[in-house]
Length: 446
Image 1 (tube, rainbow, N blue to C red):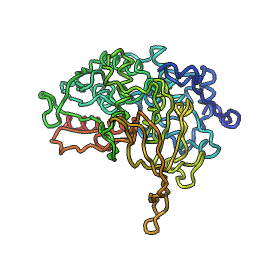
Image 2 (image 1 turned 180 degrees about the vertical axis):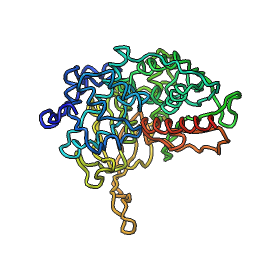
Image 3 (image 1 turned 135 degrees about the horizontal axis):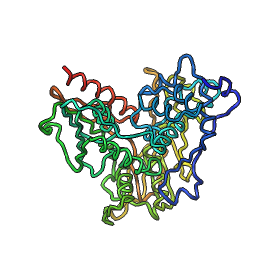
Image 4 (image 1 turned 90 degrees about the horizontal axis):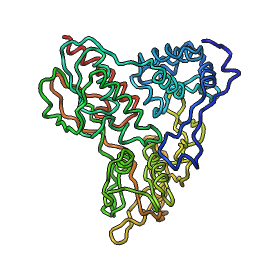
């Protein structure tokens, strides 16, 4: 702990976002960064707690107090080395992680000014790339081969871990480029795809083989491998099977998000297949991060208006007595996309899609109340009978994803990430992959 009184004199300072009028005209990352001096000052606020709740809350076990201290002292290379011990891809988690560590920071719990852990993390890894602290590893090979099916966060983490242990790793994926959800689910204004490309180039330089445009059936795995890791994620979205679902203009969120990311790489999408919000009134059904991503994308495409509805009630703005620490705080989250302009509404249940000439023109919704059950004490949805129609000529379904049904796996075949847990966080998929890499290593050493 370099400065034991910094948390008393230095307030939390976030880098913030680029101006709205500027960022909605492009797909560049919306987050800005602090200069080196300000970043070190933010790192100095870490109190190196006797019991570091940030470390406890981090799924991958990052040693935040250690690298905060080295960052404050200006030892950027050492800070990177400490960070890289536990986190395979800080450039991803530093951009898209909801920062469970910050929600458990003592400065969050005491004065609602947590250390800027996530921003500090991405600053460290960007400095590491910029200053060439990162060079391709050349581990001694042990003669054994592992196939990784899926190139999302879990698959990439597994490949990276096993490669460093000396295994010859081949990654298979049916998409045209590696990255999975990182590449085709998260908009470029949150995670620019050049960041993924940079990491994939490094992994290839470390002799990891990528076989793209290759579908692999779990029941018919490729031959000549000593072990297999299934990391195919949870790709099936939750549908809304109500009257009018067959109308055109109703799409799953990932149809728009994945397509837009492909368009930005120069891929040609036939006009009749394009999911484009230009000149349309957009309704996003689902109040989570995917819904937020749809809002930002719709605004950049030129939507006339964007409305987001959520079936759950509006949460409190700052603290929620119903979800005290160490629970995840269910509070109102306002993202950069929300700031760019949309109408947000809560406690609305979708009843039916309304259309004209086969095209969606609106959604009939019903206001609902959430009441605690007398028997279980848990909130229950109660219909009110109060309905209205929200006009929309483009509806995006962002209600999450279904947990895959994974068949029984034979000896030597492992699985990790969302394919096992169901839809979760990028950082949790990475954590599961770290554990599975260890299991595969133990299996192959027997």
